Image 1 (cartoon, rainbow, N blue to C red):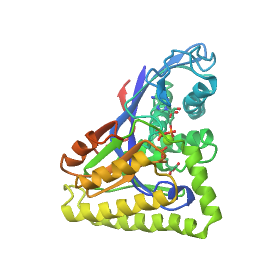
Image 2: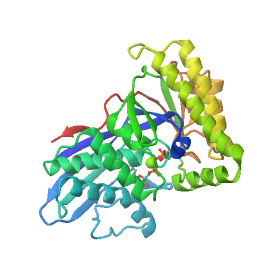
Image 3: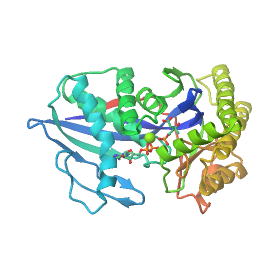
Image 4: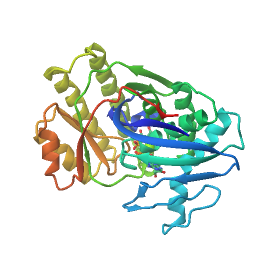
Amino acid sequence: MTTCSAPGKVYLFGEHAVVYGEPAVPCAVERRARVTVEPREDGRVRVDAADLSLDGFTVTWGGSIDDRPDIDAPAPLVEAAMEYIEAAVRQAREAADRPDAGFDITVESAIPLGAGLGSSAAVVVAGIDAATRALGTELDPEEVARRAYEAEYEVQEGQASRADTFCSAMGGAVRVEGDDTRTIDAPPLPFVVGYDGGAGDTGELVAGVRALREEHAFAADTVETVGDLTREGERLLADADPEREPGDELLADLGELMNFNHGLLEALGVSARSLDAMVWAARDAGAAGAKLTGAGGGGCIVALDPTDETQHALGYTAECEQSFRAELATEGVRVEAA
Ligand SMILES: Nc1ncnc2c1ncn2[C@@H]1O[C@H](COP(=O)(O)OP(=O)(O)O)[C@@H](O)[C@H]1O
Ligand SMILES: C[C@@](O)(CCOP(=O)(O)O)CC(=O)O
Ligand SMILES: [Mg+2]
């Protein structure tokens, strides 16, 4: 039996624009998906994803990929939920050169689904690492990231950047620009997350930005401007001392760029009333900056605030269902038990 875990992430800067070759800076945070894998002799795959909840209702089953689970949820929804795990299984079988390997898989995750915190990437990264190790093959985290990207790309029909999967596999802060992926130094940033309890449809939101960009030159310019502000944010991080808590000046400068980034995402049509409400609650509470994170449409915002004020204010914001502090996860994918 092998258990691996991988963290979720917030975008400090650059989601959506990263799909068009602009740089992005996601940061891994201490909310993890854990995947436990036990090889099976009979080549079958059974999946237990007990905390899987989609669009507000929960599906629970101990079904199998070969044998569709008999549960009270529309089949397409279950199919969609299983696709990431199926893709991870395909990658693990290929990496270990065991095309007929079977597995019992258990997924437990503390990352809300479809909310911009990269739950899909964390499940796929932890799943590939656990399944290959269960077969006696050890991949380095870069290889796990590469295979996890292939899996996400396949499930999301070509609408995926390397940002989520690379960040989840490597941990810490990373920068991704097209195929160029690297880890970068960052100080321990005081992230606060607000979650509206909902989710956005990543594919639909990405398609919306693509259409806007094709229709209007100013929308294409907006995407490029996101790239410009991301590059400026990267310079701020590069000049900071990664060992020290960031000072007020650095937080104010990063926060200003986050606010600008949120405004541009809003212009690109991927924010939502609930996300804007949480962003404003954070700013009013004194956060250095706040923006939506991930695909948008609903889900999470991220703010920078070393004090408890933002989390406290979000707790009283009607649109916010849950708020929590999110520590930078310096470790990416890791073995929990073998
Ligand atoms: N705990 C889990 N168990 C099984 N599948 C999960 C789990 N968490 C996430 N997933 C998969 O990831 C999908 C959500 O990914 P996505 O829409 O990319 O949003 P995000 O990555 O922002 O959370 C879910 O619909 C499901 O297929
Ligand atoms: C919108 C996008 O830039 C980020 C999506 O992040 P998430 O799946 O919502 O966590 C898409 C991508 O980079 O694959
Ligand atoms: Mg995702």
